[in-house]
Every structure is written in C-alpha cells, then in structure tokens.
Image 1 (cartoon, rainbow, N blue to C red):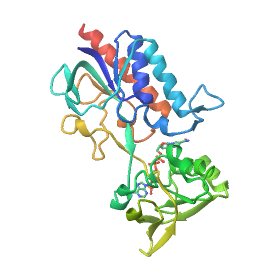
Image 2 (image 1 turned 90 degrees about the vertical axis):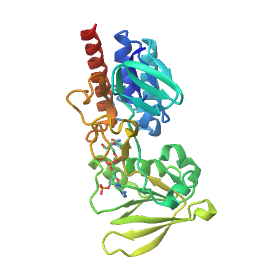
Image 3 (image 1 turned 180 degrees about the horizontal axis):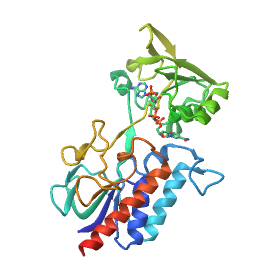
Image 4 (image 1 turned 120 degrees about the vertical axis):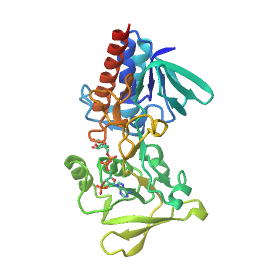
Length: 306
Ligand code: NAP
C-alpha cells in the first residue's frame, strides 16, 4: 500500500515527488511512456526562475528527478493502463501488476497533437515528426516545414534553421498565437519562410516511405498546391493524457481534468498537477507549482485521516 502514487515524471510529477518525499510519504512515481515529459523534447529553457543563463530542458527535469530521489521518492518505469478510482485505496494497473494507494496525484501531462491524416501517420519516423530537437539533425542540408502558429512552432522553426537549408512555417490563419518575442525572433531569421492561411491536406509519399511534398489547401479559397519539403514537424498543440480516467473523473470536452479547487479533482484523494488540467498557462514553472500544491494537499489529507 502506497501513501502517494504520482503518475507522470515531468515538471509537475517531479515537483510533487520532491514535496511528498520531503514529507516522508515515500511517493512512488510512475514515469510513463514519455518519461521526463515535454521538457525532454525542448532545448534551452530561458524562463525558469533561478537559471539566468538558461538551462537545457532535459537537464532541468533530470535535476528535479535526482532531487526527489534524494529525499526518498522511488521511480518506476511503465505506463498505467487502467485505474479504479471508485473507492479508496485507489487501484492502478501497469500491465498485470496491480498497485494500491491512499492518494493519487495525476501529472500525466499532455502529448503532441497530430493532424490525423492517414499519410501523416504512415510517415511518422520517416520525415514526419513532433519533435524538432529529436529529429532535426536528420534533415541537415534539406528544406523542412513546421506546422503551427504558437510558441512551439516558432521554437521548432528556429531550432531547425541550424540544420535545414530553409524552414517553412505553415499556419492556418493570418494572426499568430505565438508570443511577440518568439514571433519577432523567427521573423528576423532569414532562413524562415511563411505560408499563412493554409492547411496540410495530404503528405507525399507514403509508398516511398519518405516525405517529398505536402499538399496544401488555402483556408481562404480552398485552392490546393504542392509544397516541396523533406520533413514535416508538427507543432499544433497537445492533448491531455486522461484516457484511462474517462467516466471516473470530471473531464472537460477536450479531456482536461476539471479542477474542484486547488489541486482537487471531483474524487477526494485524487489530485491533479500540470498540463493534464492546465489548458491556459502550460509552462514548466506553473506545472512545478501545481505539483507542489498537489503534494501539499495529499499530505494534509493523509495527516487529517491519521
Ligand atoms: P498553442 O499555443 O496551442 O498553439 C498551437 C498552434 O497550432 C496554434 O497556432 C493553432 O492554430 C495551431 N493548430 C492547432 N490545431 C491545428 C490543426 N489541426 N491544424 C493546423 N494548425 C493547428 O500550442 P504550443 O505552441 O505548443 O504552446 C503551448 C504552450 O507552451 C503555450 O502556452 C506556449 O506559450 C508555451 N510554450 C512556450 C515556449 C517558450 O516560451 N519558449 C515554447 C514553446 C511553448 P490557431 O492559432 O489558429 O488556433
């Protein structure tokens, strides 16, 4: 029987683990398939307080994990495939293995969103990617394309200019969601080309198992044309990882956990932390802050029950 199980090992999960471990609750952290969370897919983090020179994303998340382990948190590889939150202790399954816990902190984050085209899915790992940091290197000396108009798209495009001959950003409307500083930085980079009011209708060439071009469609008049490129990097946001809680926890229509105040969900003893609930801020520092809140609430509940 565990006092606290934390699902997820990104900024939110690791911070929850640090606080729960320092409260002597010996938390068990289940790392998930994307261990370390979204920070492992990024490079320089320039806005996390305490790092005036910036810090590499994977380094930051690894420091957090080591800090949690130092105070007694235990990390376990694996993905929770099923959860029973109908009564306490809560039950979780990793494959056939069943775990029981008095409190649960859900910090399972959010995963990259895809366009949902068959050709796109066929070509993942063959020129279609959601992680420039992971795959950009393979496209040295080639033209590549980024889809999206938010900060992630700007960041990915800027990163890719280090390798590619040129980087096209394709965005579905004229206005950008990206912050001014990121947009300005991208606008200043001469390697970046801009295609606005267009969406990807298809990706060529699944038969050849490589990306050769994108079929683009104007969102203004529906006209289609071919855009030659060697890779397509998706940066169109994320979807929360809450599938296993459907029908048990209050979720909004997009699948984000609905907060019932602080870090509380609709089930007492189950807490949320990070992007799994946060559709607004979605920053490393806010995820860390909410992980802290969840651990403090779990600790207070257990203390009151004792
Ligand atoms: P985002 O802000 O939600 O932007 C997603 C972009 O993808 C939007 O421009 C959206 O278009 C577009 N999009 C969504 N679905 C699409 C579809 N099916 N087809 C075509 N385009 C689609 O997501 P994000 O850029 O990943 O950023 C998430 C959060 O992380 C934000 O809070 C951001 O500030 C933060 N972040 C910060 C940094 C940094 O500060 N260095 C870096 C990365 C991310 P519309 O605009 O038309 O909706």
